[in-house]
Length: 636
Image (cartoon, rainbow, N blue to C red; front, side, top):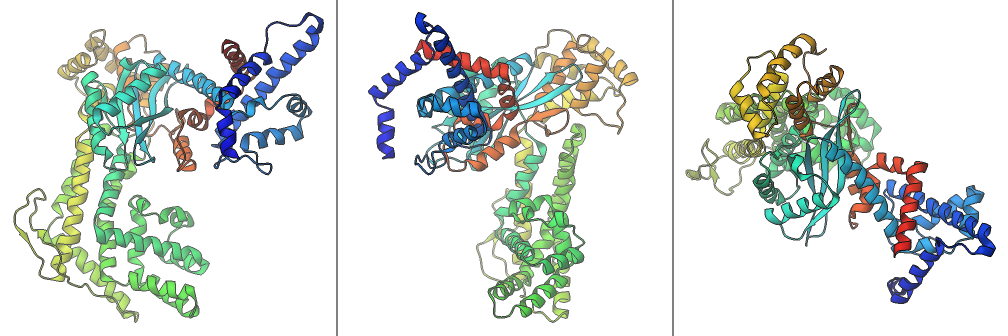
């Protein structure tokens, strides 16, 4: 039945009838003998169209498809669009009258799609006008889940917007692009073509950032190169915290034993949350508050951000074992008891305890940098030295001494568990593949087979784990244009230090600034030294933008102002604070809610850009869309 309906909807007869009806709805010529009646009918048609557009905006904002997830049409469920119309008709007499007096013209999928496209065009026009009014923007593209045959990328932009009181940072969603070929040239072409299609001034691009959950990341590096061929100033940057997280998650997942240890830890917390008694005991023993052991932290990908939990569980593991055993005995003969017995067997293994100690050893040091990256003000100047310190710290611990510390620490916990009357599965030695016995992970020589359990742990878990995290940290933090970022940051924020005129001239030439930047920098450094005071001793680019507005510096130092706007466009820090506006969280929500569904830019835009949807709901903007749609219908 539904198939026949769809077939009819696409037929020539239906399309011609639809065209005639559309033109009839809003005819300009008014019959002389019935002018007042006809005018009232036209006005009623406009009111009904306004109602239809409001419905579409509301449903889109809520991430609801107009006909429901299964596109079903039945007397019991007519789909979100018609069901909402009927619901509104119950509450308002005018809505009921409008619905009763109109043929179901707007239930046509084709008409709804035309309205949605018109809404999308209105929203894109608002966004693009803001982008083009800015002096710089960066693109943020992320691979989204789709079919295996093709790749889809979400395309977002980040740009500064000057207001009377501050310079805001905005992150906006533009739409999706589909890449039929996974090559740098093709993906670059699709992204650029889409930006130009919606009207973005491509000459103002100053940054690019990408994210992928698959090996498509390698291809994205090729996309970066293609953009930089055309525009060298499109620096490859990204959120520091995000790349640190990716590197650490790779470390946790690529080493089999570490991955299994985290899986066991997740099982422990899932089980504990089932019993209020166990949850209360764990919180008391580990000195953890409820929000630190909530269910959202039972995902393996979440543990790298919570090294304190690893330490707490490791330190009180003997007591945790006692609680699990006690509850298991009281639930003897039940499914819960069987589950607890299995969990006890897993947490009383030397391998699990060793991996917990090792995970904490690594995550506690990377966590220092992670917590700084989560703040609104990231110290760009010390970024490189801090990353180098992390790398050096982990590299220096790739030896027998530090391995023995972890081994002995795990053994000590095992003894405590044993002293409470529980058995601990000792480390076993199994012949496995040959491994690399060298402090140089890039050297494939000197391969050998471990001959003992501790040697196997050292090479297969400890060294392999350190090599993995070092490899990924170097990969994520070596391929981006942080050097240029640091140079611009120093010019903007290090006004109390001696001016490096050679660097300043290089930046001036690189960004093709219109005037000599040296006089501006000389003036700016003196002025900032006397007038810019940070409450906590540090300033972010966003803080600096506000100071430029407050002190009316934009016209005095236009070159430095442009550099500031370029820096604000880089996606290196979060844009979720009071002086920023980001829709990236809305995009994440939309992608989760529409998992497995076709991703359409028009519907996604309505769901993601909710601020703009609210503006379109205003009477004047809504009336403008109505008039545009009427004009379009008359022209068809």
